[in-house]
Image (tube, rainbow, N blue to C red; front, side, top):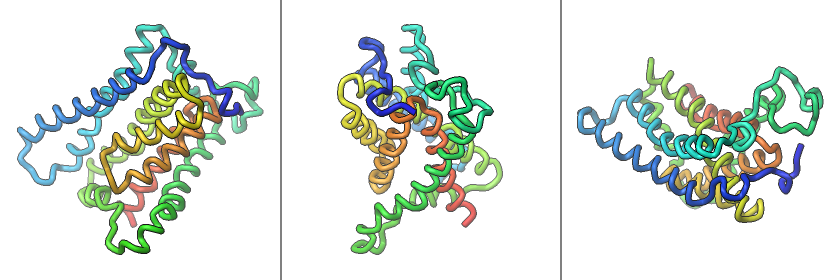
Length: 252
């Protein structure tokens, strides 16, 4: 496993902070435009859950679109330059052809990622808010998510899981830990780059109450990506983080 300092960043000139900003702005503008269009034709308050879930997809236009354009124009690789690994059936890293390879993720790493994400959401996030809850009794951090899941039934649950547990972890890790973090590392040292990408990750969600938790998970996921040299475990950790929330709010 590589150290933080050895994780590769894009070559100078591949992409930079301006491209990251473009991706964020494009995703926000796309979401606002399409959301406004939907609200014009759908007369329902609140919106059906399946529409709410699908409205998350416009956010991905910028988060995936800008990296895709950069990689295509410069003939770069999703695997080598953004750190998207290939899944192997091997259980442990030392069973690979070379234990220094960073383009593959093992079954064990997938499971580790899921457990890290679940632990982060179930244990670390409550601990993070514990000092605040001592003084603020009515703080409902899970309120927005609970309002969403209370409308979950039938196809709504399926789309919620598909978007939140599958789509969002892949798209957001590609952008924030594969694209943004590497752009920041090209300008700054690993630690400031990690902090900057985590703050950006929290800000883009536009959820003030959840901001500390999002930044915390951004730090955890970013650290994993820096250590591994690829996004494999980070994506699975993100999936576990989101899946735990959906499961608790829907079924408990």
